Amino acid sequence: MTIAEVCLAIGAGRYKSSDKINHAVGVVLLKKDGEEVNEGDAWIEIRHDKLLEERIITKVKEALIVKR
Image 1 (tube, rainbow, N blue to C red):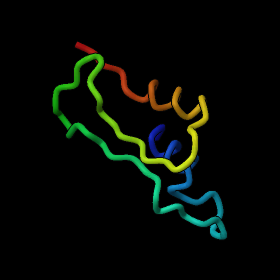
Image 2 (cartoon, helix red, strand yellow; image 1 turned 135 degrees about the vertical axis):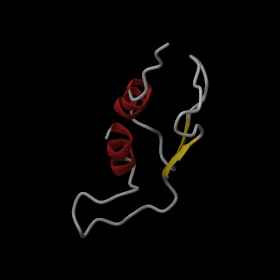
Image 3 (cartoon, helix red, strand yellow; image 1 turned 90 degrees about the horizontal axis):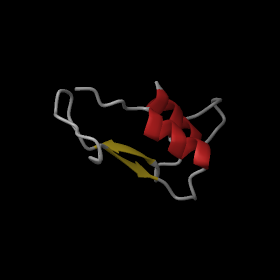
Image 4 (cartoon, one colour; image 1 turned 90 degrees about the vertical axis):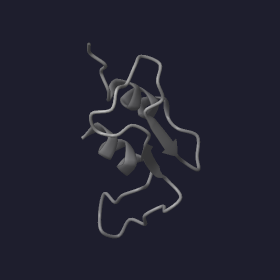
């Protein structure tokens, strides 16, 4: 759910029906389900049109845990 929350926070979704959706923002997942991800690999691209708040960056960094 974390990535969905990030999308909502940067404007790719609505908190209420009257909110406008920003079609210039969103995420692109760079890895497919089951694909190997190593520490340091890029796995997501965040498309945004404003400076990202530190809390958003932290949420994304904490969204994926790589285990062996």
